[in-house]
Image (cartoon, rainbow, N blue to C red; front, side, top):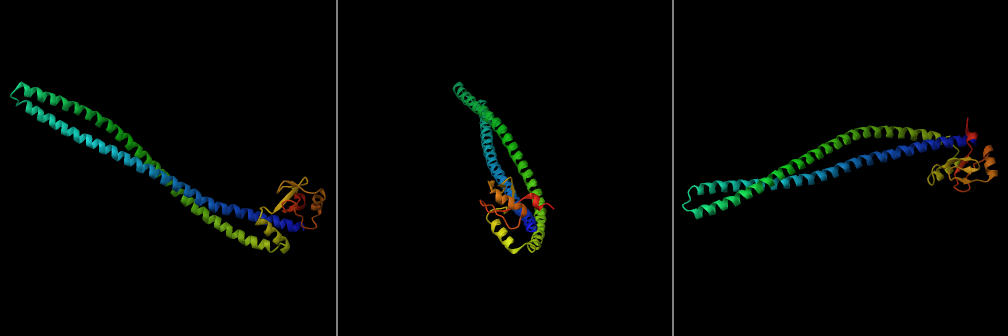
Length: 237
C-alpha cells in the first residue's frame, strides 16, 4: 500500500507539472495580447494627436494666408496714399491703413502662438511614434522568446504524457480510478495528514484513522474532502 501511495504522489507531481505548463501556454498568448492591445491604444492616441496637429497647422496656414492678404492691402494703401489729391482722402486711407496694420499685428501674434502650438504637438507626435516603435520592438522580441518557450513546453508536455502513461501502468487500477475521480473534482487528490489534520482541507481527522495511516494497510480518505491521505514519514525511502 505504501508503494501505491508513493506512485500516486509521483503521478500527482507529474500532473502538477502538467498543469503548470498548460497554464503557461495560456499565459504567454495573453501577455502578448496585452502588449498588442497597448500598441493599439497608443496608435489610437497617436491618431488623435496627428489630427490635432493637422488642425492646428490648418489654422496656422489660414492665418498666414490672411496675414499675406493684409500685408498686400498695406502695400496697396501705401501706393494709394502717394496718389491722393485731398486731405480728406489721405485721412481716410491713413485710418484704413492703421486698421489693417492692427489686424496684421493680431494675425502675427496668432501665427506665432500657432507656431509654438504646432512645434509642441509635433514633438508629442514624435514622442508617441517613438513610444509605439519601442513597444513594437518589445512585442517582436517577446514573440520570438515566447515562440521558443511554447516549443519547449510542448516538448516537455509530450515527455510528461509518455512518463505518465508508464507511471499509471504501475498503479493499482482501483487506486488509480479513485485518484482520477478525485483529481477531476479537487486537486491535488492526495493530501498529507499531520497532527490529526488533513492538509488538503485543513480539517481534523479522527485519531484512530490518523494512527491507521502509519500502517497504511488500506486506502484512507479524509472524511471531509475525501482526499487520499498519507503520513510523510511512511513514504520516505
